[in-house]
Length: 224
Image (cartoon, rainbow, N blue to C red; front, side, top):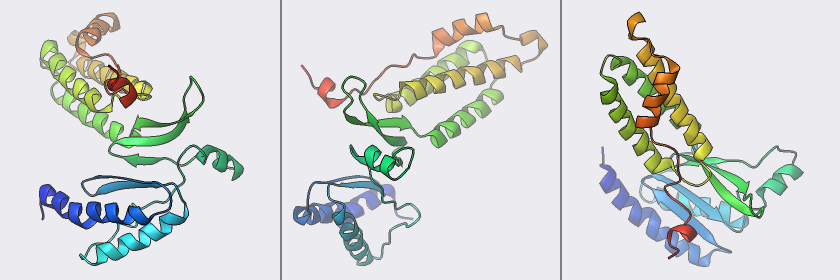
């Protein structure tokens, strides 16, 4: 199996440099983001989508590669997507998952302008919580400070990646579910180890980090 590093270098020449050349002759803006073998391409002109896919298939074929048809989707996304979806009788614009986030067409509360909202992918969050529950059940007899410090690192690490604007509600749900899983594990220690809720809340406040945005929008990050 080729290593991820070599695969990344390979795709840099097969895909990245080729895209830079292709977009010069495209109608309208073309935005492409790639991470490893996963990528998203955005087009201002709908007509360019089909042309790009055909050209990409031809490019890949030269190197013995193929697109994963099961994971390749074409959808409308952007400031007009909600309006067009309503005209077609759809409840909302389509969403897509990329790099652990579900990308959603939304509007800003302040001015009603279009924005892209990124939410932690529900499937990935459920998988993380499932793994945490299993670990907590295995370690339920360890001292509370030991588990508390471990959970602090786990939750903080999760927030370090997912704490983006618009995602606070989902991260609050994650923190709440981690606390519930911890309490469930503590209460399984036995009758003499039952943990009352009032006492447990103090442990939650001490060890589980609060939700706050760690990756603000660039306009805020780079304002001096």
